[in-house]
Image 1: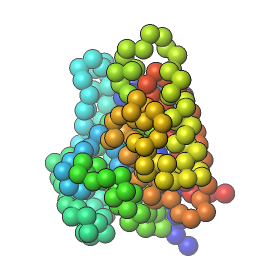
Image 2 (image 1 turned 90 degrees about the vertical axis):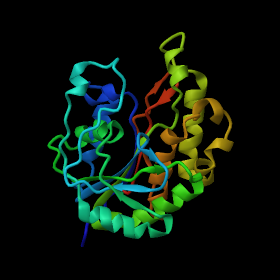
Image 3 (image 1 turned 90 degrees about the horizontal axis):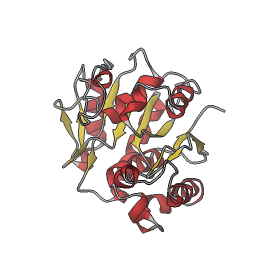
Length: 259
C-alpha cells in the first residue's frame, strides 16, 4: 500500500530560524521524524502571493532570499538546492484547472519554504513544488483548492502550509517588552480550538474576536486554511511549537501522523 503523507501547518516566524538553533526549528526537525520521508512536498507559503494560482515548474528551483538587508550575511549565504518536479507541477495544474492554475518558472523556493524544510530534510533530497496564494480569492476558495490538493497525500506527497496564525509585525517591533501581548495566546487558542472543533472559525478567521490585531496579514494566516483543507475525515490535529512572541505565534499543526 502507498504511504499517505500528512498535511502540515508550520508557523515559520523570523527567517533567522533557518540558521539558529531555536525551539521552533527543533520542532520542525522532530516532526519530520514522525512520518516516512515523502516523495515530494507541495508548499503553500505566505511569501508567494500572486494574481491567479501559480505552480512552480522549475526542475532546479533557486533559493530566494526574500527579506531585508538587516539580516546577517550567513542567512543570505544559505542555499537549499532541493529539486523541483515538473511532472508533478503539471499534474497539479491539471487538478486545479477549475481555478485557472498556471505553471510558473520564474519563482523558486522562498524563505517560507526553505527556512523550515531545511530543518526537516537537511540533505535537500525531497522535491519541492510551491503553489501560490491567489490574492483575488476568498478564504472559502483557498479551502476548496486545498481540498483538491489533499488527493496528492495518497501518493505520499506532503502538503505543507507555512505562515503564522498570529502575525503582526508592527506589534512585534513596537512591543515595550519581550512578553507577548495577551491577544497573541487568546487568538491562537481560538484558532486551535476551531481546528479541532469548528473549522468555520478558521475559514472565517477575520470574523473572530481580536482578528484585526492578531491576524491582519491574510497571507500569513491563509496557509493554515490549506493544511485544514487537506485534512481527511477523522484525522485529529497534533499541535506543537506553541511558542509566543510579541505579535507572533509559532504554533504548528499536523494532520494524519502515523498512529
